[in-house]
Length: 116
Length: 114
Image (cartoon, rainbow over all chains, first blue to last red; front, side, top):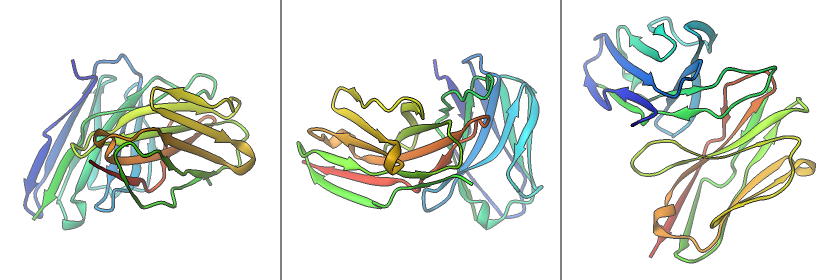
């Protein structure tokens, strides 16, 4: 069983469209994330959710809206897609921080988004 | 603010050679965590190791070994007797005390040829 799974893996869409990427984890983790990997392979945090509550939003355009229906799911919805949104989006999860102690983050397989 | 530098953009070796991937980090915290991830050509991110700042012991796992030196703020990764399957992009990352998110370096692409 895949620990962190994302769908779709590949997505090609036109500028201006709205699209969603779904993520589910079966690790029992409390914290979930979205990271973006650009064309130069640079990885950067976008959002972090803990028990369905947003805790980090790294100055991501408000066209990106994460939604967490429960702590095992964190979906990413993108409105009015732009060419610059083309990237690989990784969902990830970890146990909650405990007294500041940071746990390992496990990543999904990535979703390749191409905006044409 | 924290920063992770992987100065080697790309390394090419021939199978069976040993190779070391460098990672230098910056943080104001005294407690932090360092990670290495592997991204093979298939694209997924695979966790390799996590160390906390209090544990400077080197670690060995099969052909992989890690050298953590606080004095030089480095967390280097060595692959012994490299294999073609080791070809991937390797990322070093840092998280600070009280933060669960990772700051990544730009990655080092390792190409191992037969």
